[in-house]
Image (cartoon, rainbow, N blue to C red; front, side, top):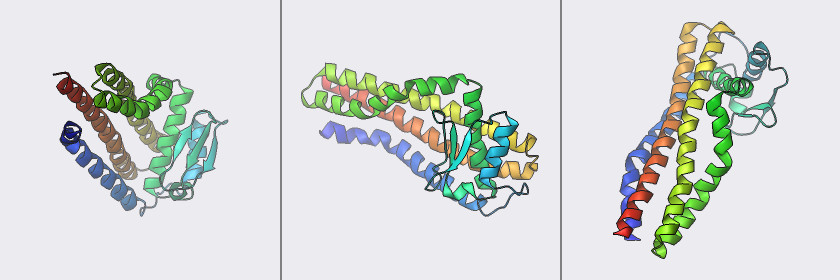
Length: 227
């Protein structure tokens, strides 16, 4: 048990990065949510315009409760926009909306990393939850078998975070291209939107770091118990 808590030191860099990333994305979004775009369109209208420009007429745009709960649902073919982006015409809102539209375009174009990520979601969900229980039981009963099963299961979650990173970066790249080429938004505003999306991307980098260090932690604990 002492070993379990002592190993928490490994996570300190990732925890610091995660806190910094969350503060960064919150402050950056707040800053550019005060800047109106010259495009003079709300988030919901932008989503519809970008979808239509890509021939994705069958994808709906809906409002969803919460703040920055925006997401694309490939199963229902719906882009759901949060309260702070749906009716807003700010640079921050349009950047987020274009990003989610980027996911819809990825889905339509069968973007390989997205397909891979969606394929491992069920296994990753199991890995992120059951792995800890199984590993902890192995630690209690000094069972290397259970600990190794826990490590293998958690590895799927690590792979999921690694695959998610290029998916998110690509969606942001597509978003900026669409804002510039489809909406003809000035380069200055595109640059502001880029700052919002880059800040958001850091939260995914932090997730990768946290997951990787958690995996390393489990491996080190397993090795120490074996000795």
